[in-house]
Amino acid sequence: MNVAGRITTDIRDVIAVDQNVFDSTSTKVGTVDTVDIATGWLTIEANPFSERELYVPFSLITHIDPHELFLGATKDELNRDYSTPPERLTAVQGEGSGQSATTTQRSGYDGAPVVVNAARLDDLRNKISTDYEVYTSDMVDLGRVREYDATTGLMVLDKGPFSHDVVVPISVVDEVDAEANQVVLVASEADLQRVTPVNLVRTAAKLAGSN
Image 1 (cartoon, rainbow, N blue to C red):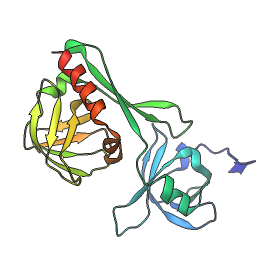
Image 2: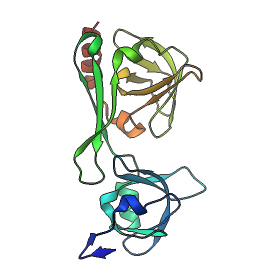
Image 3: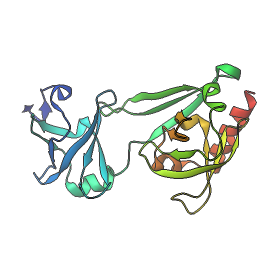
Image 4: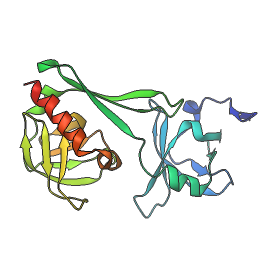
């Protein structure tokens, strides 16, 4: 139910995978693919024949019932502004064996920062090895680890989808699967594209200074 532009129904009780999604002009956008209640974000499968998805905050929902939901943006606006996952920022705290990395993103409810991952870096440092396949949080295959320095915490990957070698710090690692030889990041492909060489140097210096 929507009263004076405000939803009075608790979205969390109604939103579900496979609901039809419509834009502000009642044009169908796609169907709900995944729902993250903790962060207040959903993904929309815009085309069942491609991997393209839209990443939409709950705050954009203007109406919802058990079968469908409507968003306060046009299809063009959604494709322009919500085609990549919400930006995530990672900060390294502490020194020595207690050093950790905390990753936050904007809440889909109210825009406030919400923690999506917290990792003790020493738990990750010695789990990573060369030839491990690396995936972003949105499951883009970045290629294999060609070089890894446990002291600086930097992984140098084969080119993967980029036109150049990719350098990734362990501070953005979500999990390491030794059986599958895989590393999954808490950062998306778009997040990595925003990382500057200066940021990498600062992160490596902080990680190396803890050892």
